[in-house]
Length: 400
Ligand SMILES: Nc1nc2c(c(=O)[nH]1)N[C@H]1C(S)=C(S)[C@@H](COP(=O)(O)O)O[C@H]1N2
Ligand SMILES: [Mo]
Image 1 (cartoon, protein in one colour):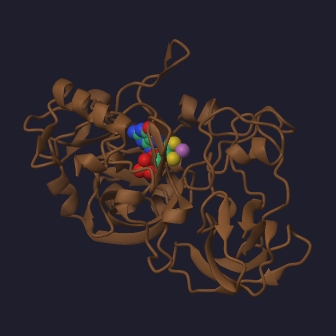
Image 2: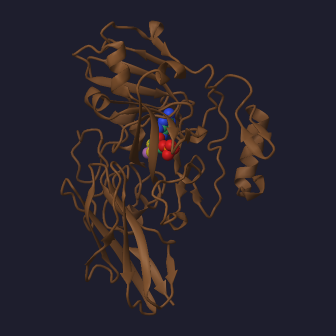
Image 3: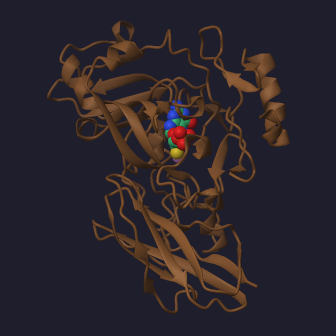
């Protein structure tokens, strides 16, 4: 199995094995024998180049590796976005700490409630599908398609996947422990190492979200697609805010602070809001994901000069996709794609039969509209962080 790893991955793994008590048993990565949250490699799972584009602490799913017959994204193939590195958290000693003045019995950090996984499993279990996506998905197209590059990981469209989460609704936990009616904000904090950038230590990755989202569909998830959460995706417990920016779904969830005042962190004051371009200085923190579409094709694609059925997917953080239109001539003419059925919270699979591809260079385009009436534009206004690139992507194809 190790032989399938990219060379850089092999080096990382042996470093991790030496430095952070990762045991490689029979060619498989085993959990550590001792408790702790020591940092290991940036990403632990194999990142074979036919499935991923490896950005170091981040890894993008390749759309040409997506199986048209599989609705959910396999955990082994899901993109990873780490600010630092995947920590090794021991589920046996793990506890979620909950505190704050927004609990019906206010608690300071020092006397936080401590909930083990067994405690959480005694609450009513839930499962839900969501399209899990990074806020910066599509960022590279600000540069390659619109001529203004944005700083940050140069994702194409693969920082996304459809996942079935297993866990407990946060509202069940909050009802059980008691919420002050005046509570407005909850800060989720991860157990991964502090995020240091440009010489500044920003502390643990953390981001607040409104109590209304907590009482709506937020999930404390311990499982993905019927299996325990993989380490890279938040094992043993992560928060999931369905349909919202990926940064809201804090992995390796260490604590929740429930507050009667608005909480902040650099992840909602400095990052993950629109700055620069034509945006006002006080744009609010980003929440609901935009509408996007991708073809299940290599970048760039080579296709034979004969009738061919092409597939792709569209998704939105706001709900179902109502319409998908495609163009095989760079936007001159549009056709309604043949749509599949979407699962609640998930994405829509579609197909288009290209009847007569002629030899030469072509541009494929796909444009979706969601139930909220939001349609993908031909151009997205620039922002410094390169967030929410939702314009129709021009996918290059050579027919030969
Ligand atoms: N603790 C912690 N949670 C985190 C992050 C992180 O670096 N640390 N990254 C966030 C971002 S920006 C995204 S897009 C998602 C990615 O989740 P995944 O790696 O499971 O796909 O996790 C979010 N939660
Ligand atoms: Mo993200």
